[in-house]
Image (cartoon, rainbow, N blue to C red):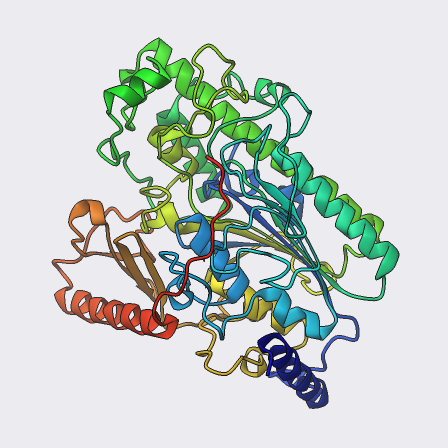
Length: 544
């Protein structure tokens, strides 16, 4: 029997059983009109970058969503792009589906979000970054009806590799007027307009996956100009300012973490020579920098801010299209980031021309550890690490028809694996009735729907993290974490008092460390076993 036909038949029967059941797990009648979903993902954006999380970057559209909905303060990603996106699409930890590290295709039992939603009547659209190596074609492998994929993550003005509906598009020529963020939003708007014209009676999923503010730091010059001198105060003073605003908002209650000038250090002479005398590979105190270094670092942060600002503007355009369709009230909007801000410093793509204007197509700059620490205020570490700076993300949820709260905070612990069960419950299929393919383990996530009504409603036993030798497990308010760069020595923190991970309690709580370390090891082994052995790795499509 053909595998695709088997899946379709299975889902037809399963959807019929759900429809016959007629009630969800709490005894409520499913909504007569299913909600739409708009899932918006930023790339390498720090926890405190948006205005509604304490940032000074102008994000009025994200802030408006927050004012009309909810902000989650303890939501997590996986610390890296592709494992987070695998979690979003499949509802499983990346280790369960061979995606951290990527080891071939998804297991035969794994499905992507459209493959769960389409039997329920949804049309599904994807715009932007994909980066799920185990299902390389969003339409053929993941079930989207329309897709625009940007495979080239090194060029914001003239990408070489991109596809529409799984088919290659011509490389974008220089000086064409293309900019990644704008084009991604325009594709989403085109899909929504087509949906309104041809499928007005069907609900939709739009997965809007931006590639900013991921390196290279590139943005339109008029956007950069808005922030050119904004960051000359430096990361020391401005981290304090953000932290104070966050405490006033109730986002955090911890102290401000100290800068870690030895994490990491990029001191290779060839790399530093390529980038010029303004670059610095560590988060030194701002007053130790030369005037040239201060201007260079402030300019890089200005470009980062410009990228976030432009993303917010394009989000506003997409939301305006949803509003024009008369669909905004019944569209559930999620906004979050795939990992924390990045401390990486490297040069890829077309290289870096020191004589080119910073932020232009001929430049290749990275945010670096100083302002990455600022973007991740008040937490420690960065993208790739599983300390809070690498894995904590803002999560804004907006749904006027279904969330009565306006501007409230939710302190429930959540993870990107929760998106699939949340979406499915809102579509009328509670978590305990989501049809899984034969051989699939239970979904590990929790629906966030109970948190829409009240704070503290989502309960879980643990949240698991594993990436490139960096390890962590959170159980209640306790977090056990280690870094490969620190010889994988376990550290223990009470996040109810010390979410900035400054007071290591491992020596005072040896039994707790032993218990939590054992649980992490069991989960790591279990998840790898569920994924099964590596299979043939699909070809990657990333331009260098």
